[in-house]
Image 1 (spheres, rainbow, N blue to C red):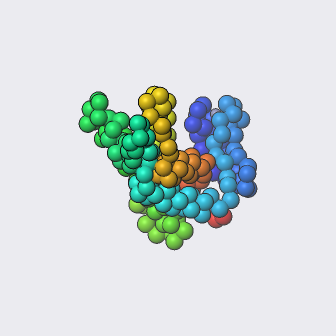
Image 2 (cartoon, helix red, strand yellow):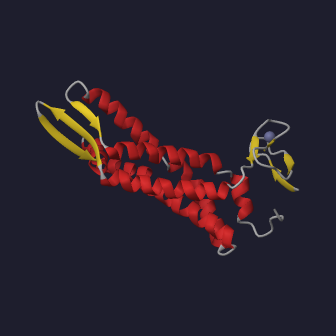
Image 3 (tube, rainbow, N blue to C red):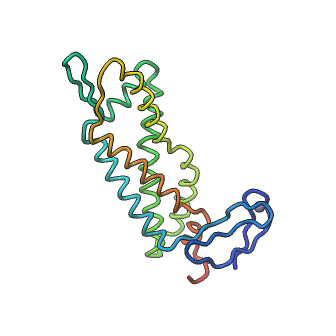
Length: 202
Ligand SMILES: [Zn+2]
C-alpha cells in the first residue's frame, strides 16, 4: 500500500489496491484522491489519436458558410481564428492558436508518449518530466472557450446572414468531446504510478 498526502487537507492516507470503477476518498475531507479505470492507458491512447485526427479534419474542411443577399462566403477554421482577433490584436490570435491548437496537440503527443513508454518500460525518466509538464499545461487547454466564442458571435451574425455549419465545425466539436473524455482518464495518481519504476506489481 502506498502512502499519499491528500491534495486538499494534507492528511496522510494509505491508498489500497483498487479495482475497476473504485475510487479512493480522503476520510477527512471527501476529496477524491484517485479513481481506477481498467485499461485506462489504451483508452487514453485511442482518445489522443482520435482528437489528433479530428483536429486534422477541422483544419481541412470548411468551418462556417455564410450566405447574405445571394452571396456565399466559406470560412475555414484558421480564418475564423484570425477573424476573431482582427478587430482587436495580433496577440489575441496568437493566444487562441496556442490554447486551441498548440497546447492540446502537445498534451496529446505527450500523453501518447507516456502511455507507450510505460507499456514498453523505456524512457521512464523522460516520461516523468513530460507528465509533470502535461499537468502544468492542462490549464492552458481552452479549445472549448473558442467554441463558446464562435457560438456567441454566430448569434450576432444570424440577424445579418444565414449561417451553415461546415464539416470542420462537426470535427471541431468532436475534437473538444474527445479531449473532454480524455480528462476522465487523466488520473494523476494512476499516471504517476505507471511511470514510476518503484511501483508495486499489478
Ligand atoms: Zn483530505
